Every structure is written in C-alpha cells, then in structure tokens.
Length: 226
Ligand SMILES: NC(=O)c1ccc[n+]([C@@H]2O[C@H](COP(=O)([O-])OP(=O)(O)OC[C@H]3O[C@@H](n4cnc5c(N)ncnc54)[C@H](OP(=O)(O)O)[C@@H]3O)[C@@H](O)[C@H]2O)c1
Image: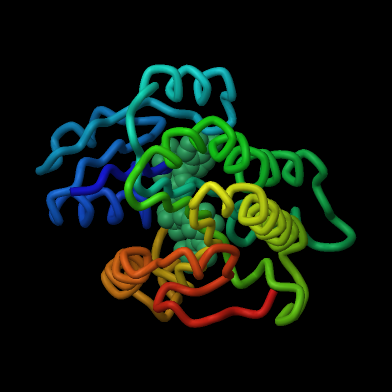
C-alpha cells in the first residue's frame, strides 16, 4: 500500500489518478478546489481543499500532514488558457493570462515540491512527479501557445533542478507527459482517452527506480527530448 497525493483531483487526469490508485488499495490524499464530490468515491480517499496557488494553504496542508510519509506526489493541477482564444497569439498577447498560467503551471508545483519534499523523503517509494507536456520541449517545438509551452518548459527546468538537489536524498523526480488526452483541456480531438493515458502512467510510475531521477518521459515510459 502506498500513500499518493494528487493535486487537481476534481476532474480529468487527476480524478482518474485518484480512482485508479484507490482501486489498487492505495491511500489517496486527493487535493481539489471542490473536494466534497471526492468523498463519495470508493476507496481510501482523503479529500483536501487545495487551491494550488494559495501558498499559505499549501504550507498549512503540509503542516497538517506533518509526520506522514507520501510515497508518490503528483503535481497534476494545470491550466492551458481558454480554448479558441487568441490571448496566446503574437499580436494579441494577454499578459494577465501569462501570469495566471505561470502561477498555476510553474510556480505552484515548485511550492508543492518545497512544502512536501520532507513527506516524500520519509516514504518507501520517494517519487515526486510533475505532470508536464511535450509542448514544453525546446527540441520538438513547432511554435504557438507561447504561455502554455513556456510554463511547461520552465516546469521541466524546475524538475531537473529538483532532481539534482533531491536525488541525493533518494527522491526520484520525473517530468511526465500524459500524451494528448481527451479531457476538458485536451479536447475531444485528442488521440488518447483518459483510460489509455492514466493506467499507463500509473504503471510507468510504479516502475520508477532511482536511475529514473531527472528524466523527461511520456505516459508509456518513452523518453522525450528536452
Ligand atoms: N489533456 C492533455 O492532453 C494534456 C496534455 C499534456 C499535459 N497535460 C497536463 O495534465 C494536467 C491535467 O490536465 P487535464 O487534461 O486533466 O486538465 P483538466 O481536465 O482541465 O483538469 C485540470 C485540473 O487542474 C485543476 N486546477 C486548475 N487550476 C487549479 C488551481 N489553481 N488550484 C487547484 N487546482 C487547479 C482543475 O481543478 P478545477 O476543477 O477546480 O478547475 C482540474 O482538476 C495539467 O497539468 C496539464 O497541463 C494535459
């Protein structure tokens, strides 16, 4: 049995992670802005209210869980910017949206890592996962979505830095791309269903060894170019 903390557990990939880990018999600390619905799910699920950009709330949750071991911490909460909007296009860039996207996708996961590194370090599995995107890859860039791409590139750099700093404490830090998936964010045209992506990520995470620290990979374990 593992203890798994997931942010953005209300819907999409985060909700499916919550259900799958609970179905495996794991203890799930399911963090969401609307946690009440999670209490009705089957299994050992502990819902916690968490707006990931409320850093006092992040620290308060870390204090509340003080002394607990968290085997797998999944920083999943993220935003892409409104679909169909031109707010991320050159000519109509919206700086307010840039700040929102970076706040949620880049700063918040690092604040989570800082607050919970001790909980992860005292666990058996010691896995610190950022749900990132291939759109953050510099090597495979084909342009567009300036804010979202840059937020995930910066997230990848943070996880690379964490791998250097926390790897010596036995923590396995991995930046994990879920594939392009049919969620509210991914949209209906995405090639992967939630049922194809999330079980594959759960299997991939289960197989992580210390030698995986510092990798950028996709849902099925395939290596991605930084
Ligand atoms: N779907 C894809 O194709 C795809 C591809 C690459 C990467 N990703 C990444 O995968 C992760 C999950 O995406 P998804 O497809 O499941 O998206 P989604 O269906 O839009 O769900 C996003 C989740 O993040 C939560 N969230 C957003 N802002 C938050 C905040 N400030 N505080 C707390 N929770 C917040 C949402 O909570 P509320 O319900 O409260 O809004 C929701 O649970 C994201 O990091 C995304 O960038 C997705």
